[in-house]
Image 1 (tube, rainbow, N blue to C red):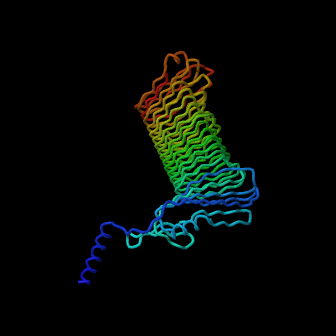
Image 2 (image 1 turned 90 degrees about the vertical axis):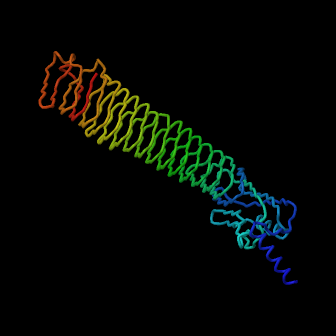
Length: 440
């Protein structure tokens, strides 16, 4: 009977484990503890701080010291396990020398399950403890100009302004901070950063969100991210499926796919290599462009040079001159054009200009299919030269009736050469095939 009883007890224990019941271990009341450590440093030293699943407050001071404090709350553990956790927590690994100090606060290497239900947490001391609930937080005081490399995962960070260069390597981290120093680096995944002013900075980001004040030169490699800034002097961008909002952009070099850029301000130079992007900007002195399946909207552009454009849409309110070497299936909706238009290879595209200014000098192109519609200022005198097959050529004939006129129409071909004035300095000269061309 004793053996049968033992068998029934074993079967009962097995059934309990199968349906999720766990053994009850001795527990203790909630335990709180803290520590404080101080290290002498020089102004030229570099600080490396490693954090994991522990919130951090960064403070600055004038002292040539680094002070680290930590607090921990532990519950649901035996006294022996709690002592092991405290020993690991209160003794972070520190290496100092050669112009740097590295502090590693990580004291837990993670939790594993044994036999599918029994959990053990391995500490960096090499010991293991039964699963306990613990939460650590840290605060650090650093010289305000120290170079600071932060490696952080699964936590929140709050920081005062750091005047030295920073190198933040973040994974699933929320950061709230002040200003930061020149030549700073952000490498992030699944993180959010809200910061003040900076100077030159480099970003390598994935599925993250950034909000900044003013920046100087910014180099960004990004995917699936959002980036907002009040002002950037130069934005160098390698982007995939991102959104950028810049209140005052002064220059951009953008290589992007599936990305949106919304920017205001007056810029000197814009370079764009785009695929399926949306760009809405303020004013540019010069734009260099190469694109497919994109939309470009600008308040004004001085000189617009397009290498190739395929199935794009352009809306520009004011424009000095535009050249597109190769255009296919595009739409150009232009406001006032003051100097010239040059479209040497244009296929099935739609071009409309609301106003050809009195200062306009040249319209040139070779067109197949599509349409061109130009509203010419009445004060502009011009020479009209075209060679067209099929299509329609509409122009204000009354302006040419007292001028020499060459008009040849034969076998759906039109050859035209006429002028509104003998001293016209502007010329409209193009070749067309099945094009609807209108001058108003």
